[in-house]
Length: 149
Ligand SMILES: [Mg+2]
Image (cartoon, protein in one colour):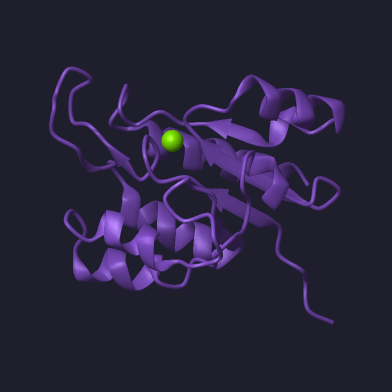
């Protein structure tokens, strides 16, 4: 019997793409992205959860990363799976399942949906536009969470 991996939903803007300094105009890859993706893909069933790619097609997500990412990062990003949703990102999530969600900012409604389902703690807030190293801290937080299970 194989162990079923928990799902990990990953946003792009403000998570995989951030800023070196909060006041910069320029966007860059978040610090530690390769390490994060390698870890995430090894331990979790990974899905995009970004307004750039919400129609079940991963290509717009990959196009968003391409100007910034090296080949290794792109190869890993290509294995993240698509989701389909229209108004709220929570539409893409089975709230009864074992999941984690990396996002910089949820809508109030999305937060309420998670709260009502008793899973607000599954949202791991990472804001790499405000904190370049946010993804590294998020990964460490995630690692501690799964060690407790
Ligand atoms: Mg975002």
